[in-house]
Length: 84
Image 1: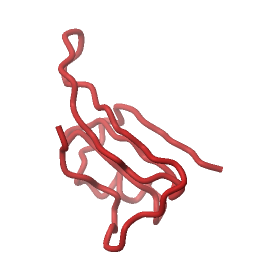
Image 2: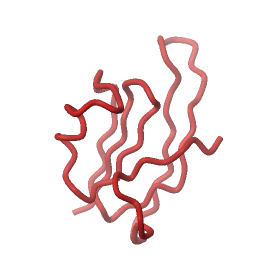
Image 3: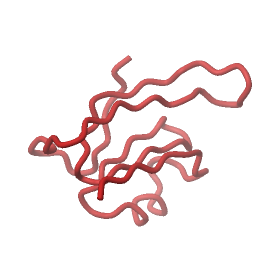
Image 4: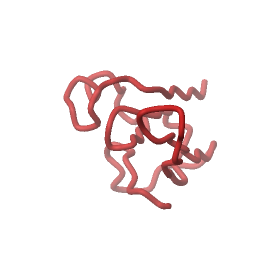
């Protein structure tokens, strides 16, 4: 069953704590700080961008996911560079 989980996890993007919580093969995208989106392998990350927010201490994170596509060869952790 396809599943997406997103939130402000207060875990740094490079920390071992977060990596140990993400099952192998799942896609993970973050804002470089504490916000994360994790999706099961049925999804491929199509893009990500941050959105300026006026009512919080950090920007919003917008992630585009594509259902039903296979990850490209060489994607080991699902992370993606900023696209916009």
